[in-house]
Image (cartoon, rainbow, N blue to C red; front, side):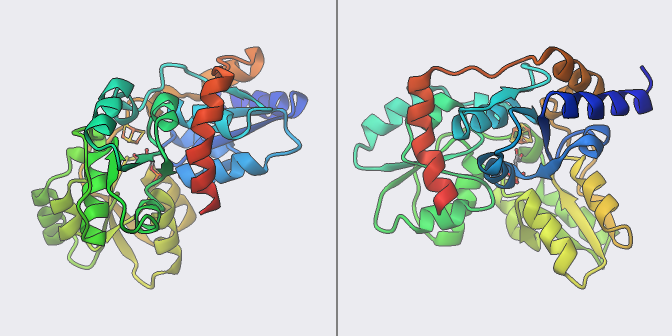
Length: 302
Ligand code: 13P
Ligand code: SF4
């Protein structure tokens, strides 16, 4: 099927099956174009909670995001177009490792980044996204904190709040590859541009940049800032959305090749197939949904 035909079929099936398409900002441009809602992890989680009239959520993102949608709104059928669309960071920490950390720090509160499995969420006290990690930890004054699974986001939070935090050694390979010299090179190449990186980047990269923001934070900055040029240090498809929404501004990639393989597994053809067959459905044990929902609800209410 040609692209235009696929788009028309997706629109037809979506209406017929009362489905809604949610997509993360790192999705391929063609997938972004057919989504009903685009957003960062926090925006999409909030959107899921509000969905009333649609029975089916087709989640174009990595698996933990679809899983999160299922946990937040267990009455809906949640479909992911490719079950193999994984997040290396979320898969990088096994529940046994967190159990061990909790045994070593029995008084600590566990804050998990939403980029984690349902099992990790079920073992955590609070959940956060990159958009509210600092605020969530700041709210836990006087507590010892274990922050999982991203060491870079955890270091960023510790740096911003000047606090000691217990961290595991997991990271996101897309952002962990950004180097201080990439920022220095970007300063030379684009002297007028503001440098904006995602807080999953190494701390020395964050410190050398102008802003460390979630993907929604980057969009907000582009909308509100009087600046006209930005170097963007995050997954490559973010530039598609920024350029589309702010055609008068200039956006450059901090480094070529910042591609999330998991996000790129979702294609228009797989989305069409998912809507046709209503597969792959995200299924979780009710007890896991119950346990993992508690830290997520706390995050959405904060
Ligand atoms: P955001 O919540 O900022 O969109 O980030 C999600 C993510 O996976 C970053 O790698
Ligand atoms: Fe996970 Fe990194 Fe991909 Fe984000 S960019 S979904 S953290 S692997």
